[in-house]
Length: 285
Image 1 (cartoon, rainbow, N blue to C red):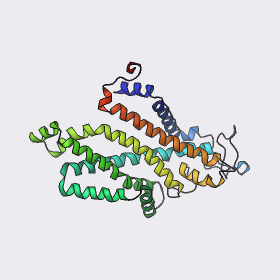
Image 2: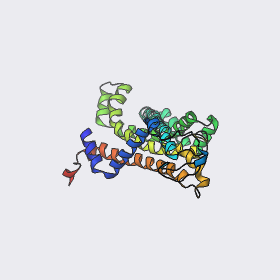
Image 3: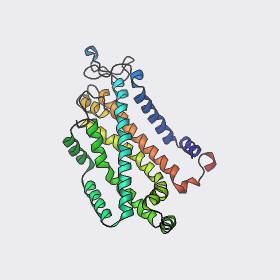
Image 4: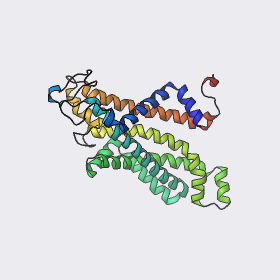
């Protein structure tokens, strides 16, 4: 599987570029104190709104802070939110969806009505309401994105459970006296894992975009935050005179979301049972 994944990434130029970019973002997040050329919170009033140059490759903002340093530090909250929210929504949604599909009856009806209610609200509006109730900040952002994101995953997991419930191996395990936990952990989860991995990868891109949107609207952190969304919001009114200020963090958001989505497509191709029988790379020709 590892060898096939490597060949798939090498054969897929978009997946290769996406993996390289996300690796760069990860390195920037981990090594930010050593990679950032300046203190992101520093001020240099003699260099306010300075255009990109050798001294400041991505320019400076209205306080003279280096935009490159702020973008590098901004990778940290972006990746933390993307990974934590994606994992929590997939785990919660998967467990609730499996429970609904396996038990059926009133439990299924109650959980699916809750899913319908959650999906009836526009996700951005629901996130704004939740963050407004919980208060601005990274913790509130994590809770809001998790509470608003589990419903779609639960519906996918329930559909997978219903499709697997009638399979021969599940019916055989039930006829042999296997309990609900044994059937779920030994037969259902392994056969749902590939789909959930793809869903988690797609959720990461969606989460980055949602978190950036909330930060842009002022719900994701203080105005001094290095969040990419906050940087875009702070620099939007000076895009004519200092276009680099909002442009580079906005580009980082777009490229990160695109990279997660392209890697999700590659993961789908890798984990698709029908694709496993097809050769990858030069042999495919």
